[in-house]
Length: 100
Image (cartoon, rainbow, N blue to C red):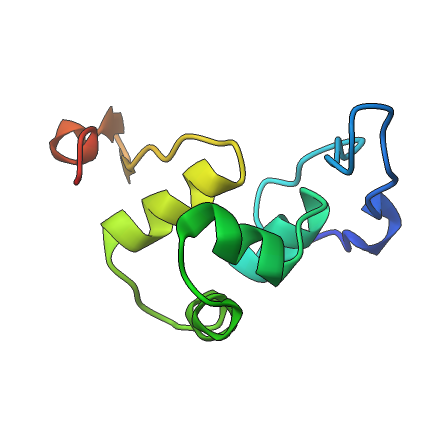
């Protein structure tokens, strides 16, 4: 069951406007993750050295390069891992650990 993140609005903290959501959800679109992290498209664009319209377009693309997705996640303060899940278990795909 998907949960709305609307109630996880980013409140300014004592150290700036970094969001610390009460809980991270197991699944959400990229633009909602950015909002849950308390970041505007403009701020994220600045961190990624691109213009804001690029972020707006990328957030709603059904497909993107792994390096682009990694850039978004790292600019939000996270780390991207690719996991393949099978009936027998899961495997972390290591090919993408150092995409440049």
